[in-house]
Image (cartoon, rainbow, N blue to C red; front, side):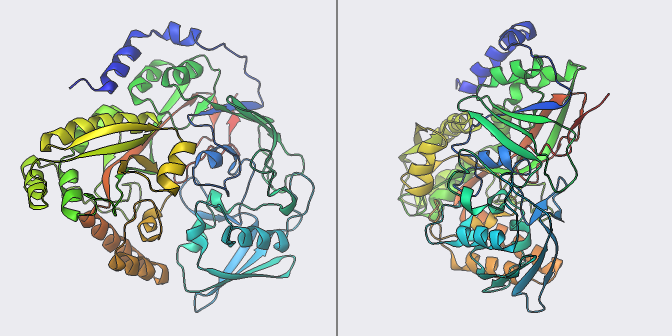
Amino acid sequence: MPYRYKSIRNMACAVSTAALIALAPSLSLAAGNVTFGQPVEPAGLDPTVGAPVASGEVTWQNVFEGLVAVDRDGNITPQLASAWTLSDDGLTYTFTLRPDVTFHNGVTFDSTTAKFTLDRILSKDSTNGQKALYSVIDSVDAPDTATLVLHLSKPSSNLIYWLGFPSAVMVEPSTADSNKTTPTGTGPFKFDEWRKGDRVLMSAYDGYWGEKPSLDAITARFISDPQAQAAAILSHDVDVFGKFEAPELFSQFKGDDSLSTHVGVGEMEIVAGMNNTRPPFDDIRVRQALMMAVDRNILIQGVESGFGNPIGSHFSPASPYYVDLTGEYGFDIDAAKALLAEAGYPNGFEFTMKVPTRSYATRSAEILQALFTQIGVMAKIESSDFPAGWIKDVFKDTNYDMTIIGHAEPLDIGIYARHPYYFNYNNPAFDAVMDDIAAATTPDARAAGFKKAQEIIGHDVPALFLYSAPKLGVWDAKLTGIWENGPVPSNDMTDVSWSE
């Protein structure tokens, strides 16, 4: 079967290093500047608006900060809140805010602006893609400028972690409407310019409250084409590509002493989401049969050149809560055919895969298309422009049969308990387990809850659980402080510096 990924690989092999370098002009390095690349240009630069992670990959920690932060090891650390306490009943968080913090426009950060930020996330007209994570917050009080109090409707053991996400960064009220194009935060770098279709320019903020960064300026470059990404790296036109998405081109960097490469782990699960209310995907037997038609190892080899890990539920092996359920509905063509016949589809069926314009999604779709033919299922592939088109058709309108997408937020298995959500999956038993996790008071109880949650959706298969994506990083060998792993999708440049 002539998969498209083979042609991409052959093309890559035919392009010499010299030719790649010629594709992008070489720029001399400025000691205080770093340019990082990312495959997707966001629709906006405010991570509190919309669902895609691309905006946070530009501005999270660089321009915007939160009450707390998730660090490179996945730990929660104080940020704009220097300390916090949780009441014995688990229903009240009290945060002590840092003094002398200003936004880039000179406005002081205090409890009033923090309250505004959280109220805005929870408001009826909120467009925050992660709003459901914070819905447990019943009300927010600002008793004095340095104190913020969150009253919860029920205990939530995950809330402090979610407050460290890009979706919960602090927003200055007068800039809330303009942050999408001209972001104003409290971070170590301030926004300078967005050259649409190309790059975002940021420079060090002189009034930063914390430790000043080593860099004078940073630039986000948007390069979607894999070969152009490689060219930019090899020519040092881009200094860092923390999430290089062309694994078939990755090996060429390892022989270049001027570059550092790293195969890291991340939290992104690649799944083939199904519309669980649309026939035939409303039948659990059909979903299970499709899962058994997928050879995950072939998929990973074809899409990620062997990098990545098979998954059997919505958790990455990078997580301490991961349970290996890949054997639950492992590759078994005969069993898949039998289940389809039992469900009333002995001759298979036809459907459409609405696939976002991301290389991993396109490659995955073409391989799945071939694998499904082995059980008589015919999949038509329909491209959907990402992010705008896909978000409207799939994420918002749920006008689709099957799609393929990477979910990058850590601990996001709770999306299967959101109603509505694009899977249209509804299992009260799963919802109850998520409530138990939220109310857990011990690490063992949380771990047991996450295990049960994985087992339920691993059995119900609301999405085809494919693989955990690798975090392939490549950067200038003289750079230090780059995140090698990805507990949160980001390009955090705050600790990056050039070595002598």
